[in-house]
Image (cartoon, rainbow, N blue to C red; front, side, top):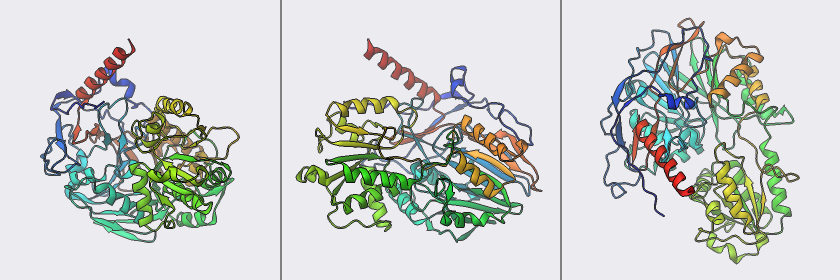
Length: 558
């Protein structure tokens, strides 16, 4: 059945959070720092606007659209004075009240650099939209100062917003490593009428000058190749962010290669650390990815039947290993799902790996081979409605059918909020007589490991970088608070830590001795992409959609 979208419309709203929205507000007294915290919520009547960005071109739905030239009506602009001479300003614009849409701005003098520009998909709080990107209002008003965008790695929560964000902030040059640039190029191709990406490939030993700011890089371990950390040089020391990372270690012993990569911090003066809080609740070190590779290879070796592996299409390191292992064991590999095919193509183009000719076959040919000669890589481990595995589970896949005796390996953990969708999908799979192996299946080999560091990885990084100041990022507010507590456990002073919200304006004094939170706040309202449009400050529309969704659910249950 075709889904109808409610279009964004101009509405007059109050941007202060209403009483019934307080359950979404994580702003508490946990903020600390040398400055005086102020109420950054600005109550102000305003008009929302809809900004059109069709990714379907001139013949796409909704007709022709102009890209990047649509007048931007300010919706929640706040008069924020420029940083005083010598002051370093840090503004997390996304990723600190949620998991996803990561973006941070660093402003020194007349120069601004931006680190990452991600997205997160629609949730129950944003029904009817495709995904959400960081609010760019602060940057749009200062686009003449923006010198560059740096991307830490090629996952969508760090690059998903790049095309739209760049078009709104003056299309500054973009710097990242090779695979990340290729991933962004692929993402940019979905928006053919937006300005061309000004791409620049950098490596770990490069130093880039952006205005008067020097930026250097270091390699980190993550689930996608070419991940990197960013170092911003200041007169008082380095500002360091590793992006998403985990340690390359086994049983807590960090590899020599990893030790060498991080040795740059042994004698460095680190002024500020901003780092990932995703797995701050998990004790110990994170499971090494090599154990997952070994586990998946063991399963491919011992299962005498057709194997379907559902994984995140962005876990390129793991997917490439599966292809190579299947190839070595004489199995053909099928790729199903647009993102799965696209990401493997990009990895091959980047020469990250090169499968033999004939190893990867079309899905239409899968039934032409014995079951023990086939491995199928599919999207949909999270039970996404239109992903390949879910369509196979509900028998709506037009090119593929499950067979009794197939083995499904769910090579991912369950993202909070997806539990019900995954359970429904598993029910559909089980009714077709397949065996399901997940990361919690007892007695089986490891089939998934996180790409983010657990508590011991995080402690190691804190001790290695020994920062003067610390801002936890990448996580919901309670995760950031837990990360603050961990930093204090390893010796940091509470007054040198600030737990931010999206839009918090944090400054380091000209003498580098004090970090404080300004009372002003950069605009941080949701920027929602709805197929053909990007809209901000549409809380009234979203509330209508939420009420409509609840009404539909109640009607269908009666």
